[in-house]
Amino acid sequence: MYHANRKGRRKTENKSALQRSLDLLNYKSRSSAELKKRLLEEEFDAEEIDSAIRRLQELHLISDEAISAMLARKYAHKGNRFIEQKMKLRGIELPHRESVLETMADEFSRAIYAAQKKIGSLKGKDDSHIRQKMYRFLASSGFGSEVIGKVMRHYPAFEIPEE
Image (tube, rainbow, N blue to C red):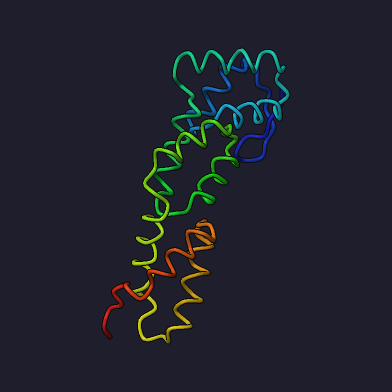
C-alpha cells in the first residue's frame, strides 16, 4: 500500500488495518465512521477494516459515544442544530447524537446564556439593531427559530451594560 507522508513523499506501508488505525488514533480521536473512511481511502480490505474497528471498540480505543460527549462539551454554548451537525460530520449515528443531546442542558437556557454574553457587545445600539444582531447571532450559533423566538420575547429583561 502506498500513502503520502507529511512531506509529500510516497512510501510503502506493510501495516495491517489495525496497526494503521492505531497510528491514526495516536494523532487524533476518530469516530468509527471516520476511521473506516480513512482506511478505505488507503485501500485496505473492507473486511479487515471492520475487524479492526470491532477490535478497537472491544478495547475501548474508539467510542462514538465518547466522541459525541466530547463534541457536546466543546460546543455546549451552541444550539442543538449546530452540535448535531458537528456530530453528523464526524459520522456519529443518529441514536448516539440524540442520546447526547438529551443529556445536555435545556437549549433555551443555553440560548439565554449566549444572548446574555452577546448583549455586552451591543451596548449603545438602538433596540431594532440589537434585535437583528441577536437573532442572526443565535441563528448562526445553531439555535432553532422557536428557541430564538422565546429568547427574543425575554429580550427586554436582558441586562444591558451601561456605557
